[in-house]
Structures are given as structure tokens and as C-alpha cells.
Amino acid sequence: MHRRKPTGMTLAEKILSRHAGDQKLEPGELILAQVDLTMANDITAPLAIRAFKEAGGTRVCRPERIALVMDHFTPNKDIASAEQVRESRDFAREQGIKLYFETDGIAHALLPERALVGPGQLVLGADSHTCTYGALGAFASGVGSTDIAAAWISGMAWLRVPGTIRLQYHGKPGPWVTGKDIILNTIADLGVDGANYMALEFHGEALESLSMEARFTMANMAIEAGAKAGLFHVDRITLDYLGNAVAGKWEILSADPGAEYTQVREYDTSGMVPVVAAPHSPSHVRPVEEFHRVEIQQVVIGSCTNGRMEDLRTAAHVLAGKKVAETTRLLVIPATRGIYAQALKEGLLQVFLEAGAVVCPPSCGPCLGGHLGILAKGERCVSTTNRNFLGRMGHPDSEVYLASPAVAAASAVAGRIAHPGEVVS
Image 1 (cartoon, rainbow, N blue to C red):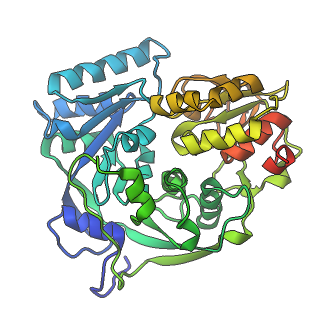
Image 2: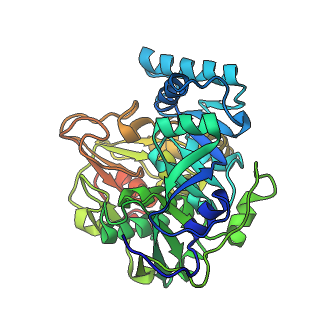
């Protein structure tokens, strides 16, 4: 284990220190930390409930800071998923858990939208993409259902302090280069296990103008490099997004000037182009032009990675006045009910429908091959989701190509993987 002199702390260490009694922390240490918010979904909540009861739990600690979000198989796709949701709903009522959501949207878009996560907080979720909330300057990480059950009993959690990789982004991203392209380039550089149990700390002038949506996308995919968390520092863009309504105690923290990083990686975003991650790994990243001969049967625009308003606006911009190719089906999935309503208000859903898309209810849906948009043998899909593992979206002989909403929308029109510049003049 790398050891270092007692200098400053990284942002991850600083947040964990606040929750472990303000002690000086170093990577590798085990700490017992106070948890600000826990989250579980329709897959993981029933497991946590059973672990809670098996451990002798009777009443949860701080029910006001427990969120149960039914988002993977809802509206329920079958009897099994209906039973899982019923078990979670009954538990919420029994324990007085008010933050129970069903058909409201995907947790990682919904909780920030409802101002339930704030800077400096420690958030644990029984879902690997809980790291999304790091965009708000929180330490947020995915854990197992038994860890969630333990936090429900005690309000605390055991954690190992991660080392931190500092990612420095220079330059100004070119046309059509989005947060998705930046993080895919980063994962290609790090590898899918290059940041195992590390925290990623995002820095640089290239990120200063990125919207919160783009930052959520980047933090969301920190886990695809194996990272425990991905954190942005709080700035004016963060504060404008948060407003004054964040629930729970929160605090703006920064990395110390003398913080020591396990690695420092630098990237010139001005040289980046729109990219695609080819099957079957988010690290198989190459420029979109290299895939222009790849015909596709499906496009998915949505998920906790790219189902937010900015993503839908970009997709609508590309699709306006055009038709989805006859050989391709396009699924658009707003990440939350609020995003769905806003997209309807702005006329985006009309654009999608006129282009030939089907607009689905908020859900994780096809991302994990749950329901909606399951791929058949030999089919290929361009998706704005975060994983393209073998069989992730359906048949083991199907293929998923990860891309930004702009590339996905352009590909839907072309019926093959396409650069947005091909269809937008």
C-alpha cells in the first residue's frame, strides 16, 4: 500500500474525514463513518430488507434519510418484479420512510432533481451508479444490500479510504464533444480496472463550462473504470443547480493544496472528437467515424447516464424534421417524470414522435436488459447508457455501442453509426 507523509487531504478524504470524526485520513485506512443518505431500488431493496430483519433490525435509523426508488422493472414487467416492489412499498409504510418513489424515475436523476443530495455529504446506494452524485461534490458510492441494511440499523458504515486519481482536463471541447465523450476517452485511458477502489477527482478549465447534466454523466461512469467515487468541486454552476432547497446537512469542501494523489492524468479536450465504445467494454473507445459501416437495429436515448433535459434537447436538435431509418427503432426514455413533463412542455416529445421514435416511461428499462427494447440475436444497438457488457441488453449474440445523445440520434436517422455532423447542417 502506498504510504505518504501527513500533508493535505483530497476531496474524497476530506469528506470522509468529516463523517468519521474529523480525523486525518490516508488511503487504505478503515473508518466508521456517519451516512447522510442511503438509497436502494426495486432489485436491491428487498435484499436489504431481508438482511435488516435477519440482523434483528426492528426500526430503521433516520427514516427521513432513506430513499427507496423503484426504477429498474417499473411499471412492473412481471409478477416477480411486482412482488419486489410490493415488499419495498410495505417496508416503507411500516418504517415511516417518506422518500419512497415508484414510477417517478431513475434514482440517479431523481434524487438530485428532488434536492436530496448536497455537497460534502456521504451517500451510499445499493446500486453501482450511485457515484453519479459526486457531480455535486458529495462522496457517493455503490455498496451491497447488507451494507445498506447495516446503515439502516446504525446510521453508520465501514469504509476503506480510497486513494485518489486527479484527472486534469485542458483546452476547450470541440463541436459535438460532450461529457460522455470526455469520460469515454478517460475510461479508455484508465482501463476498466485502472481505478479500482480509487476516487476520481475531476479538475481543469475544460470542465468549468460543463453543465450539471454533463458532470452527472461523467461522475456516473466513474465506476466503469472501477472507481469507488467520482467527484467534482462545487462552483457557481453547482450552486445555481442546487438553489437553496437541499435536504439534510451539507457543506462545501475542497481538496487541500497539499493533497497527495495516487496518480495525476492530463487530457487535452480540444483534440477530442465524438467517440463510440464498441462491444463489449466501455473502454473499447474509438472515433465515431471508424464505425460508419456498422448497421444498427435499435437506438436507446435515456438512462441515468444520458436521460436528462440537456440530452433530450440535443437529441431533438439532431432529429428535428428528420425520420428514423426504416430498419431502426428509436426508444427515448426521459430519466424522470419531471424531465418527461418538461420535454412535453418544450415540444421535444412531438419531435421524437414525428421522427418515428417511441417515448417510454421513466425507467432503467433496456439498460440492463430489464424490460423494453430487449435485443434479439445478431441485433446491434447504439445506446446512451453506461455499459455494453456481453448480453447486457438482451441476447448474448447482440451488441451494444455506447455513445452520446448526439451520436445516438444521428445514428437513428442514418440506420448505422453516424457522426452528428452527417445529419445536421
